[in-house]
Amino acid sequence: MSTLTESVLVVEDDAALRDALVDTLRAADLRALAAPDAPTALQLLQSEQIALVISDVQMPGPNGYQLLSSIKRLRPDLPVVLMTAYGTVAQAVAAMREGATDYIVKPFDAQALIAMAQRQLAMRVVPNELVAVDPE
Image (tube, rainbow, N blue to C red; front, side, top):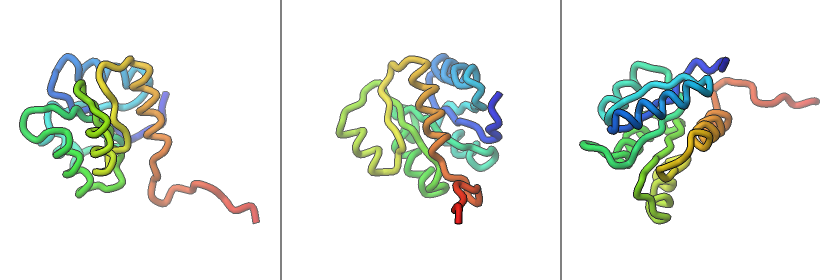
């Protein structure tokens, strides 16, 4: 079982896909929360310990790019992965320039999602956490 006390937040307006993504992450022993839209995601960021956000790009209301911008203002260190069914190289590059840590194109298989989430969580820097000790 994972010792992660923070959650992965999945932001997806399609309820069936949102549930499938959360179930997939939980099956890999990751804590996962879900939000149907950007406003709900921003509320959860204020009330929950979130270690990673995985957000759809195309959503009603504020889209994934707008959510990314809001998250980077609130928590510049928080990794955000954008996912879309309509990805282009130009969009991926733009998302990375705006602060996204990864950009994945749907459909993707469960193992790709799990590997990406685990990679993002392993790379994050936790304030005041000992990373290495100088042997001298």
